[in-house]
Length: 171
Image (cartoon, one colour):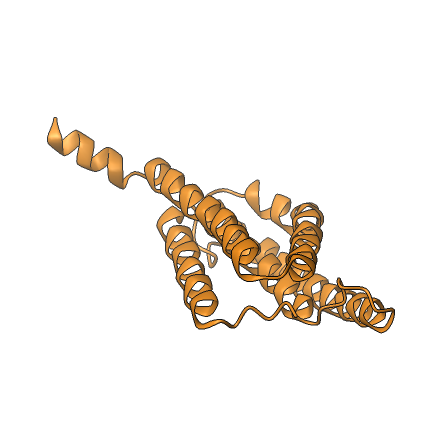
């Protein structure tokens, strides 16, 4: 019975649940920490750009992730996945560059108008968040839940370290 429980804990389903928990802790934890560390205007700017990133994740999923999630589970070099993954990686790269450019223009325009939402940190945050989501969901589509959990865990640790060091950047 213990062997069954250990095997179940190592299953990709259990790992996926743990990864989702890490991802939820990451999102909630960063939001709570920023709420504690930032002035109200700065926190408002962070929340606005989080919301923009969440909406753009839906667009990214339609552009690329949905196409790799329907492929058979396997390595990225698997012939059944290789061509589609390459095309979707290229589409994602173009999408991330366009997002960075559009966010830079929007943030600069908002900053020039005196809006508290004109923060240039959004130019780095938004594409980085989208890239993290792409890698995470690509790992799941390959059946690599443990890799996704490691990646999300590393992002969580990085966020905690950077916030702990005071490199918030939303000012």
